[in-house]
Length: 340
Image (cartoon, rainbow, N blue to C red; front, side, top):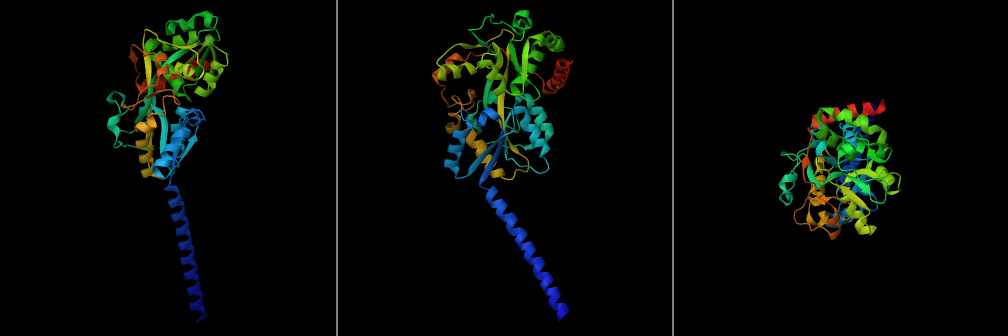
């Protein structure tokens, strides 16, 4: 009898522990089902960026919470997702662009998802026919020039190698920054197999290779250098909030690289349904109306009207592009050349 009682107690204990463990798991799942975790970049979630307003609108509309987590700049978002591949923490990756799409496919950290409202997006902005990523904004990369500087405005990429621009150009690291990657792509598109010769000639004129756009553009606006890589849409910000046309986006005759930023659903996301809802919200008219005066990029939604300050954002005459594989090789060679 004593032996039977001991066995009964043991079985009861095991059952209790199993039940308690199951209850804890359910509790975590229920909590997470009401939260959408989005990995993105610094400027998106800054006080002046679109993140705070998008968070408010999404939460009011759905009753769910959205948690934005900055992991640096656009190029670092994919890297973090790869590190967490076996146990994903995010539901959405936001900020991976067209220059990273092939790498994103190979990384196998996202799944295809076509939003129900995808027809609001102009078809020329498609990132992938299988909808691995949904575009949400776009612009052209360009050099921004301070018209109050003592150096003349360059008229083409080749001009940037002239001695008058020594230590007067702020660029970004192509390994960690999408504008940095965009500039690297631009040089490959224009100079072809001679792009490394170009970088060798350019090196003396680079003030710094900033780790991200925030840092690099901040150096520019604080007067550290008269030229910075950014977007054709950047001057619209200064017109709207600084009431000045001092900063100009320079359009070069050889053409410009377009950036299209996308949001993707994480493979095995803890809250896949919430992630899908957020991506559909992101391209809605309500959300896209937030972007022009916070993100300072063009919205992808065809129904959104641009504010008048975008008259200061010139359009590129020629659109350039580079094969992703070729660009990945070029980034390694460029960073190695600069390190010599």
